[in-house]
Image 1 (cartoon, helix red, strand yellow):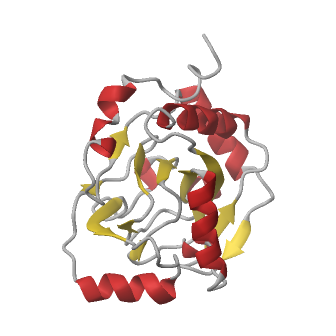
Image 2 (cartoon, one colour):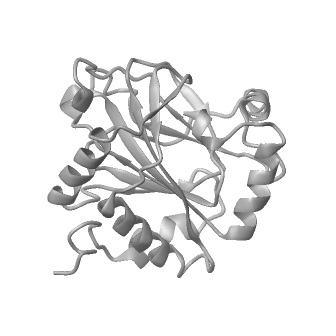
Length: 233
């Protein structure tokens, strides 16, 4: 069994990813249950929760952010995702990898990301989830315009002016991953996880994929507002 087969669960990718590439709808997405092999999930969770490199961020609450410096599992998953998506989006590669650990309950947080696609994985067992009706992710039929910086100064005002209805909702589940266009407006929360221990807090990891030219153009827009995608969580 190869290293890839021991990490990211393989699927009939052409069939699984068809909804993502067969339509231009901004809220298109695919859900990947049991995304990682059990041993890989346990190892990734251990790698992240045992790291001393977590950074404090203030929004939308006491959330820690981590750019995993050394996680063989995550590296293998990221490389395989880029390989799979390159069949549909030539030149796509992994641009950033981030993990998020919420230390307290938080209210609904609507935002968009940069890049072309985002793969997100939930790591905490759902038995610690006290808000199962709202702790997943909601997608809205609205995308951030290509010439708009991904900063709250612009995106929140744009979102509120559009008054778009809430679209699909994906409930929270341990080892559930999903892929969606990064510019799609989406929300998480309200969330309330048992925070009495680190391994009970809501933890997720996201991989941002794009082609280099598109990524650099969006980063340049972000630099003009001095905000980064990592401050949006």
